[in-house]
Image (cartoon, rainbow, N blue to C red; front, side, top):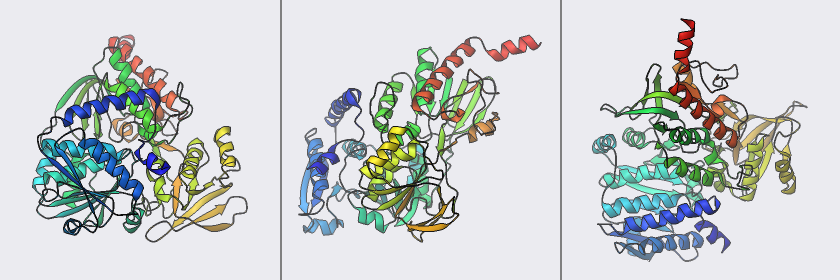
Length: 552
């Protein structure tokens, strides 16, 4: 019963604020479902004694939404029913949407983060509107051969709904050529093993790897067309131009806070984010040092932050800034449009640092992970190594241990850098730690099989069997855009800013992890507010014009 209850809980409860958000969302969903114009038929295929917890979770999810609209009809069959063979259903539980009209199967239960994907699917089916962009529509129309798509997801993954919805849009817009299976790795670890889906989201087309990670809608459609991952999409038509006082690049704690403070000072402010909203916070299992919240899941904190920011600013997710042209005004070119701004705040954060050892790049996503929240559940009962010695590494090691993963911590020094209470928890939970040890090589032909370790004191190498390697050895500042723009960097590679977060380029500011210093959520948020206030004061009385008058 405990397992079934956990399956139905959304990950990361964040107290009363999150509960209020969920209640409001349910009310809004009910209002939307009442307006459905087209019938939706969901067939649930089950089998006695097989995946019962997931079966019950799937059954309850469907019953819950069918009670919100008379247009939704549920039918349940066993795997021995003739329709299971006709539809190619082999596993239980499997959901089939509108059989005979579209080719969409869901292997598992729409719980956790994947509940969002489920709601999106019902809305598209109920209204008969897919809602793809004009560019995506053009790409889909050009498909002239079948595509069998599989998207591997996890209920705890913040990126998965984005990729699953992309695939749903393709399957519903072109049911004549695109079929889709959404597969929950927790419900069907044997399928994840078969297709080497050791990091989610992972997308296959015709049983071949298509994409690791999540993409924007247009990039997904282009990847599907080309049958290989695409990284840049430039729209054929001229991008829409948006004018703003302040464009914030990055939607982590610094960027979201800057957006709130900028808008509250009366600045027309927008936030642009190429990846998942919340940045690294969304990937943090548990946060215990954020003021006013004794303990909160990273995703829950992000949800509160994003909802707060949306009260003040427009957020443009899944949109990458490709270029910033300095001047008055500044011009930003993104993968979708152009922004013209009086000021730009770079809150681009930092990305996980790699070990840069043999095998790491080749086995990325095949047992090597930088996110225990996303990929940890797949390794339940298996042995993994967690590399690192700071707060992040220890927190993730404890998270993996609580998931039932046999984890050993690897640290290159003789003492951990993590907080004392975290280190004590390692001892309490009897998690082994190998000190003065570093990873020399990660081996495995099709996935991680073993790791070569080097003892820094004895200089002796040893080989450790492992099913996975989780890496948490710090972050690299995401400053490629700043470097390309001409922003000066510190010797350590971070944004070089003054006490008011100004860079060397007039009108361009920095905040958060991209500036360096302590990598803490509360510090990033504080820097975001400081930078936004500096922007406001400088736009009222530009320092660059004052300096010009003084020198002249």
